[in-house]
Length: 99
Image 1 (cartoon, one colour):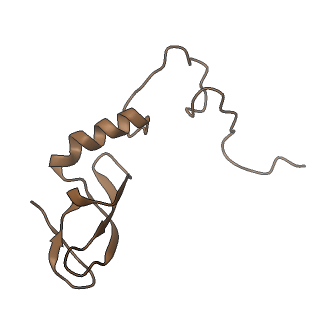
Image 2 (cartoon, helix red, strand yellow):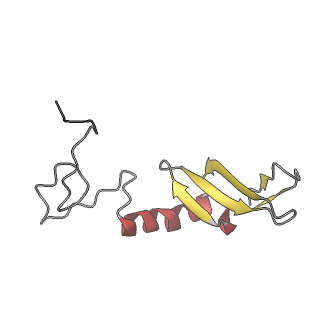
């Protein structure tokens, strides 16, 4: 098990599998929010996703339609130009269209 160091108490006791929250930023990295079991400090940082969690994280991303390069084509949504799902009318890039 790869334990991370707490920036407050310096103990190497943070287990990423016991996260409070996780937000994927790439296929192999995520922002983890974890609590140090020694001092109770809440730590938020970007770390590689532990290999033992990869299947669970990818499965959750698939179920949420979170992307990360995972194709989930919906045959009924062939006119989805912006990739945000059916009914989306957001134009990119965001800018003021007033003249």
